Length: 240
Image 1 (tube, rainbow, N blue to C red):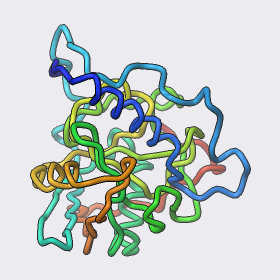
Image 2 (image 1 turned 90 degrees about the vertical axis):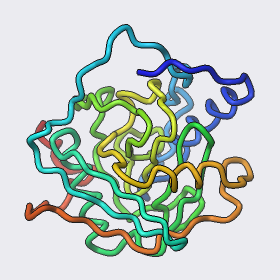
Image 3 (image 1 turned 90 degrees about the horizontal axis):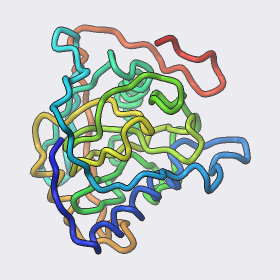
């Protein structure tokens, strides 16, 4: 992983931003535990650390990787590939929501420079979701997921409840290893990181974008593969 320095002020902002990923309501829940407890916040520093060697990518180059296209209202295009071999149920959920038109007309509502941008909330304020949640496919939740939170990676936002992700996702702008194993990373941007960077540097008020960029339409090319509906929280635990 890359080693790079940040100013103290940027570190403080990034720490607050990581806590916000936990506090964002990503899938509406009917129980009273959706916000979890204070002990659920990440304990590791969000600042990137040096790696002694380059780790092999967990992505299977021979696997079928669906291609997602985000068409922004500005005309900019962001493309990403999804990794069903890494987070199968998370990918099923993302594809299902796309095919239902769930993301069309929604926005990116949160941004932190050098960290991430977050979107996919029908409420536009970090509290909305698709009225259900999915099991968290990440290592600390008992599901092996070795995809690192490096620049361009897509991952699911959630509350402190590990099984609370719904529709909200974030795109990494910088490498943040402290998120590894605690969030369901499931894809990576392959085109349009300039548009992501542009959003990350737009004016914000307490990390909320003053003007929220509209996602005009999201489409997915499954490359001829049929993906099933996602397993939801409360169903049987998905097989790895």
